[in-house]
Length: 300
Image (cartoon, rainbow, N blue to C red; front, side, top):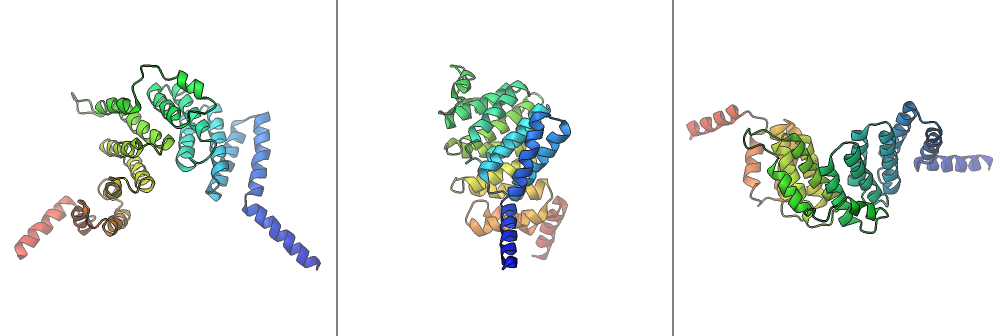
C-alpha cells in the first residue's frame, strides 16, 4: 500500500516537472536575484533558462511570449539592443496570439527609435501597432509618434523600395534595403490579417534575394507560404524557397524535397516545367547542363 502511494507521488512529481514546474520555479528564483542585484552573469544565466523553457514548451504561447519579453528587457539593460530586437521579433513571429504581443511590438519600436537610431523602422512598427492595437494601453504614446502628415505604410514602403539600389552606381543601399525588408516583414507580423500583409511579405522576400540576404529570404518565403496558403503567390514562394536553396545556397538535398513538394501540390503551375528541369539538373554546373544538351543533340 505504501509502495502504491509512493509511486503515485512519484508520478505526480514527474508530471509536474514535465509541465515545467521545476523550470518555472528555478526561473522565479533567479528572477528575484537579478531584480535585487543584477549582474551580467546572472542575467545571461536567466536568459538561458528562458530559452530552455521555450525550447521544451513550444506550445506555451503566453509564457513563452512573456519570457522573450523579459529576456529582451535584460538584453536592453545589458546594452545588447540588437539581441533584444531579435528576441522581440521571435515573440511576434512565433507567439502572436499572446496578450503580450502589443507590448512586444511597442518595446521593439522604442529600441529601434531610441537605442538603434532607426526612426524609419520604428515608424513602420508604430504604424503597425496603431493599425493592429487601437485600444492598446500605450495607444496615445504610439499616436504621438505618428505625425499628421505621415504617409500611409504602403506609400512609405514604396518610397523605400525605390531607394534600395543606387542607380548611378548599381550598388545596394544596405540601410534602405534592410529598412524595406524589415518594415514589410514586421508589418506582416504585427498586422497579419491585413490583406496588404502577404503582398508585403512577397516583396520583402524578393528584396532579400536581390540583395543576397538568402537566409532572410528563406524565412520570409516560408512564413508567406505557411501563413497565407491561399495567397495567389504562395506557390511561387514555395518554388523560390527551393530555388534559393538550390541555386544560391547549394543545399541540394533540401531543394530536391521542396521541388518535389511543389510538383506534387502544383503540377499545373507556370513554374512546373522549370521545376522539372531544375530537378533533372540538380547540383550540375552550368557547363555540365550545356554539355548534357550537346550530348542530347548528338544522340538525336
